[in-house]
Length: 261
Image 1 (cartoon, one colour):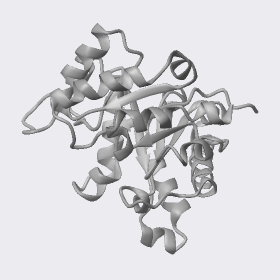
Image 2 (spheres, helix red, strand yellow):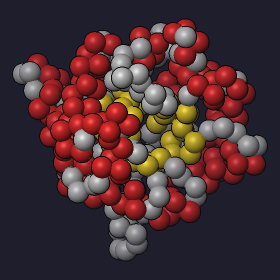
Image 3 (cartoon, helix red, strand yellow):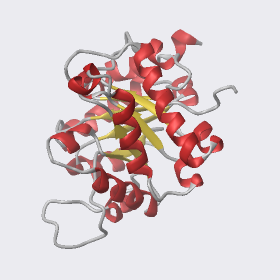
Image 4 (cartoon, helix red, strand yellow):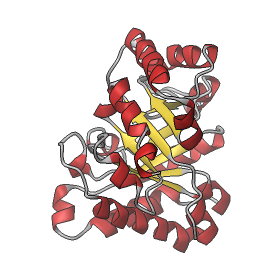
């Protein structure tokens, strides 16, 4: 079956850029991309919470063809959760995509599979699309546990969702050993894990959902490796970290389609 899934390239800025820098970055990115890029690829930017309103304003006022995303949210609408941001708040800012269960949230901040499941459901409930992350550590990889780890995280994160809900979301395979290390999974490694993800969706939610769900690869993505990664049949997009902070470098990643036709 031909891959008709629209590619999605997402820039996760993590804890970088104040709101002045954020405005400059999206303006430079919009200038660096051309209509052919937008016709071929969806592009999202995921700034820190303090930047989202500024980014939303400049994207909408200048009619940029960029999608506004967030890096995280709580699963409750409101409450005594000091320092947290709710999905309802993000939805009011026209956020379309929310990263859920990034390895840094899991590893550094102790988010559990159940936390990730609740956040995934909450993002969907407020009309946004989750980018559900999964991936293994170097130790798990060395022990041959990649498939089991990815399978367990995907099943847990999607538990309780309908076939249609799963079909409409994004799943990002981001091997922890390749995030910010300079190490990158080979295209074959990425394809193998993304194929496992699609198989989990097919087994649990049906072939139609599996054919529709978009699967990204994340982990030290650069302009030089983006085309080979995107040529893999089960890789539908890229979740880009450090390289997305430089608008010119990020634009070159988005332009991968010019190299692979």
